[in-house]
Image (cartoon, rainbow, N blue to C red; front, side, top):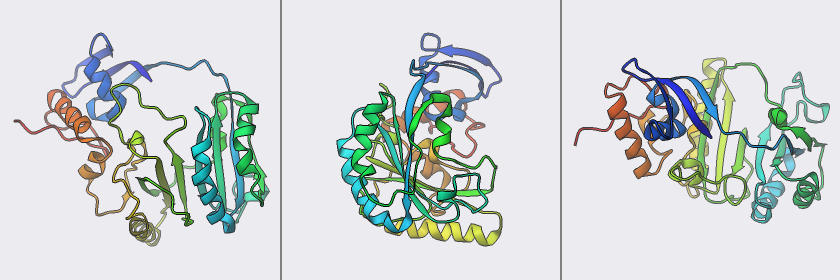
Length: 296
């Protein structure tokens, strides 16, 4: 949680803000970041939890329907604090990952628990009992190593993203996607931020296509359209602010609309009013822009 910040606003003023000096701007930064200025420093509230228990279980992609159906039921039983996601992956044969997951499509259950190792083991036991696991990376680790769970590439590659949220899982396998559980588990909205999209739906999904050439860009956009069709009956219409990439599908969603649907209507209206006060000419916001509210 952001406790304080140093920010330069559109009028050129450098401000040091916290809950006492400018609670409304601090609220805006917590939900829509770059729309209100250039942040040069932050003070964050830390959690005294140096060791966490996390990792991933991997199965061959052929088992995806079974794993996804089991996950749909399992997430309703997890203890408070348990974070989880299902990821559909294909690591290149040359990727610096364990041999068991190189070159072949896999489905992964990613888990995180801030409690004890025994609590994580007990919670994950029903999923670990499913046959076919090819790799298990769950372990106790310093929180600073949490990024190792996903084994993401450090390369900055051209990419197009797809994201949104759904209210149920159908059991069908999808490609190049992470399905993140955002209900019952670790995610709880701080007071005043209930209107952000992260907490509006039980599940959030995010996919990414690497697009080094026009042909792959076209393929990514076609995939976005197909996913739109697949999710039509279960989509909630909301999204998460952090899931929006500069290049994003489906292309039919305009820049303003894709940001608007991240928030509830009252939350978005409050952001737009704050934007009008601080940046009426709309200098800030980049690819996640909240335009200033129109004069009443």
